[in-house]
Image (cartoon, rainbow, N blue to C red; front, side, top):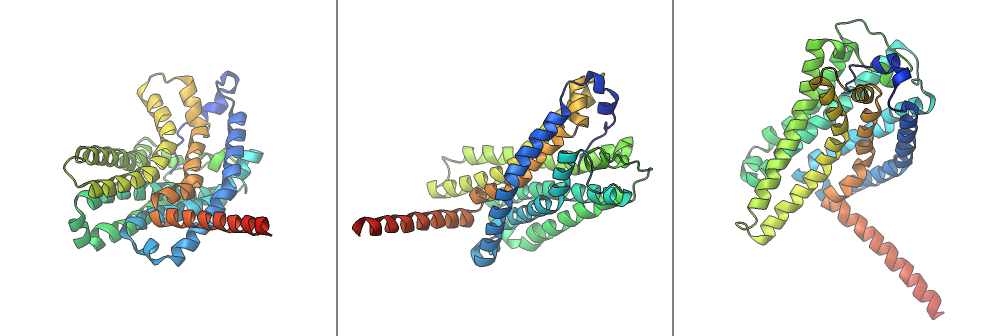
Length: 325
């Protein structure tokens, strides 16, 4: 879900603009385009490992991380080309009402699903470290069901909110994702949407990560060293995945909070909120997800290290053969 309740502000105050929107879009275009191909190639290699390694796809701790990885891959390969086309030309790919509805629904569904799964990952990792027996006994109801329900809820809610918006949509083909859906401009709908799809999951992610970090550090002296190290590794895995997406959302949330808590709000905060530049920061977390998975999933990390090691040994053997001859 993307939020942009002030899409017309920037256009209405272009003469007093504090930020260079075109420059910001150009920087986003270069950065995302540079990361896109390596991200896709690395993601394809991870898919190969998922199909090849039974332990990788069967281990409970990897399921949600793999789910987030798959959704991020869909967003990278299917939704991001529309964004790059807009950033390069300043207009949406297909200037039609139907396409705008599709793009907004697609974008909101993917973003919301990633946040929902990240929040579930944070709760489950806490249970895995401190209440593992409970999690193992209730694996279906605590692990599998929430994964499916949260993903479906994100998709169904986002699509329904856009398709059945209780207002007349007036799309602007010169604004990213056509300016968003009109329902977000309605006080009740927009406030509920923001709380349900962004504030609640982000609060769960930050809250459970903080609690988990404090408890793991505090229990260092009371736990066996090998058990504590195992818990620390799981904590680092969680932080690497969750904080990647939190960091992507935080700039926009901070700007939005400044706008909402100041009357009148600072003009630069309004411009940052309405220019979509901060929203584009979120995509960095999406394209970087495959690289983070290398550290978050031990099986992937081990296979990459083995692959690099084999390459080095093969190269060394070739050098030794040439030297001996």
